[in-house]
Amino acid sequence: MSEPTTIPAPTILVDADACPVKEEIYRVAQRHKAHVRVVSNSPFRVPVSERVKRVVVSDGFDAADDWIAEHANTGTVVITADILLAERCINAGAVVLRHDGKSLDAASIGNAIATRAIMEDLRAGMDGPLGAAGGGPPPFSKADRSRFLQALDRVLVRMARV
Image 1 (cartoon, rainbow, N blue to C red):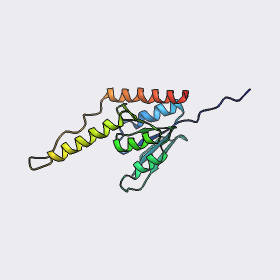
Image 2 (tube, one colour; image 1 turned 30 degrees about the vertical axis):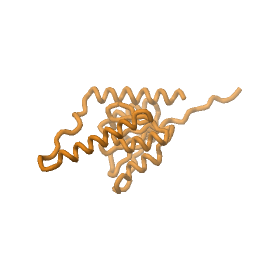
Image 3 (cartoon, helix red, strand yellow; image 1 turned 60 degrees about the vertical axis):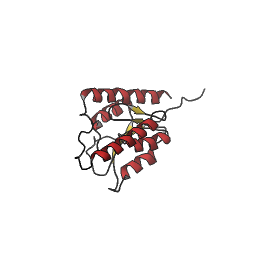
Image 4 (cartoon, helix red, strand yellow; image 1 turned 90 degrees about the vertical axis):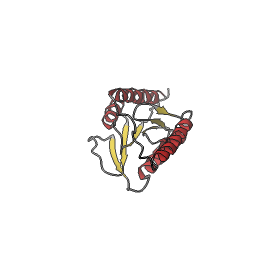
C-alpha cells in the first residue's frame, strides 16, 4: 500500500505596495496553512508567523515585479493589480487575483492588456492643454473586500484538491 502524497502548501505572493487586502490575505492564508511573501520596495509590518515573510527588494524600477515573476509558478497565487505583472505570472503557471477578487487567466489577460493600453492612451490625451485628467479607480468597498476573501478562499481550496 502506497503512502498518500501530500501536496505542498501554496505560496501567496503579494505585490504589496498598493495592496488594500493584506490583512485579509494573512487571515485566509493562516486558515489554509499557506505561505505568504509580502514583496515591496520598502519594509511593511507583517504578522509574526513562520509562514509570513517580508521580502524587501531594491528600489529599482519593477524590482518587486521582477522578484514576484521569478518566484511565480503552479504552486503560487499572485495578488496584484498590475496587469503586466499578472501576464508574466500567468505565463509561469500562477493563479492571479486582483484586489477586488477578480481573477486574471490566460483567457482574460489579453483583454485586460488591451484595455490598459486604451486607458493609457486616453489619459495621455486628456493631460494636454485642456487640463489634467481626473478620476482614478473607485474607492475600495466592503463588497470588494468580501469578494476578494471569497475568491482567495476558493482558489486555495481548489489548489488543495489537486
